[in-house]
Image 1: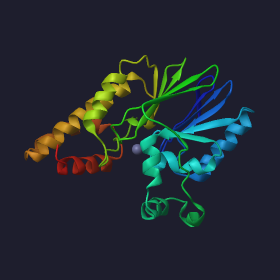
Image 2: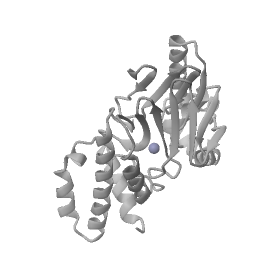
Image 3: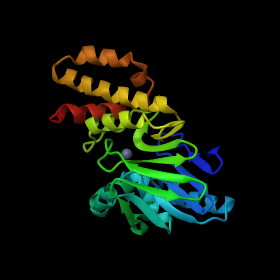
Length: 265
Ligand SMILES: [Zn+2]
């Protein structure tokens, strides 16, 4: 855990799992993402309550992916997300949840696990004023249709969710939209940002947005190249590019390419 600015806490998952954060302001505490594990989220809640008397007034889910939202169950406060996040979570099948939960140490107490849905949603953006700190949540899409980012003023810190991933290959899923993703990265690059907290990987800055953009642009070219039969040439090329070769979890790259080469665009 790191307090990067007074009251701005970041919990980087060293094993590549989702990063979490919380902001302590004058009027209360807001948690950003809750991890896959209810137990871990509970420990986070207890920790927050041990360092401040101010109440936890809200949890924000940057998107619906379980590693960012299943820990919601530990919290008894407002859960804020984009309206699509709530919609997707509401419609998660028992089978989908069971499949995720069986891969985690929640497996033993699956009977006890139930999804906690967001109960306050927004369409484009939402502000949370904590008196001396302002959180601005903005819907961006891209990684998933419902992805959002959270900007913290006055510190110019961007909690990016999986819109930005450092150190690891980003998760490109069937509902990712590369075009939107890149367009929004370009827009957000114009913001006055000093620190970027990615959904996975270490703390970065504006360069993380640039790397993400370059990565997506390249992987788009790569998938086109593979479709055109230039597979050896292309793989050789990206293996020499540090924005690819320095990232961990290559299975995510393979997964992404499989999705991209079978998709229409
Ligand atoms: Zn995700």
